[in-house]
Length: 138
Image 1 (tube, helix red, strand yellow):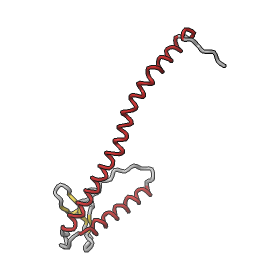
Image 2 (cartoon, helix red, strand yellow):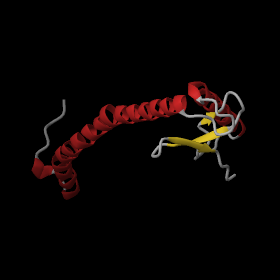
Image 3 (cartoon, helix red, strand yellow):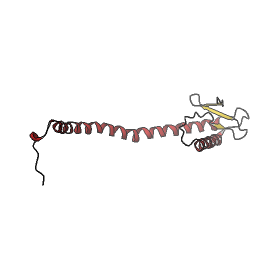
Image 4 (spheres, one colour):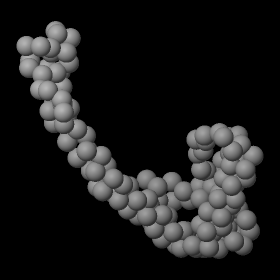
């Protein structure tokens, strides 16, 4: 059984450490609460808003494609052309990940629709809600 130690028996380093624990522990706990609330807000509020925004953008792009004619053959692009471009983009990403497994990419997507009839590639301009011919800078 240990005997209790009085505060008078502690040296100044031990007193300073004890004072630091008594003062800093509650402060750290008080500061941890807003950090936890912010983290939860990020996960449960901002992440769904971002996912809804992406879904809304994709829906609008498909809706425009259903009514927009191809600039080469005048056939309506339709949702199939957007799916073709999505499939090609996923294939390109998969190949890049396979070849450069440890690299981090920043890729700008320029092809948003590929005409199912003639194969012309189109880029989507969301502000104007139109498709234009794809321009490649690389």
